[in-house]
Image (cartoon, rainbow, N blue to C red; front, side):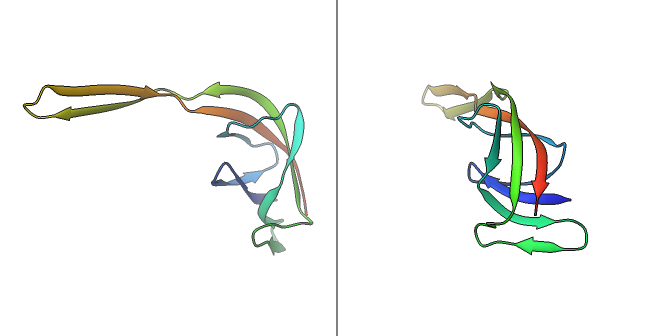
Length: 101
């Protein structure tokens, strides 16, 4: 069984037991994802536009962190202009505990 959920402006295909990194969430312990777009159990597929009200995807927060630094370097030729910026995007690591149709 798998589901497609939306969080943080991105869509994720998840199944039970998956560990995924999503955009930073203000959640502790177990919680439910509100935007469930699709659920499939192998024989039956249920779609929602944009929300599947009967489906429920429960997840548990494992921890928070930041991804590796992304460096952005700008330079203009023969002008002496050089800029180096770094950015680390925060994330929340969650484990999918159950999917109910």
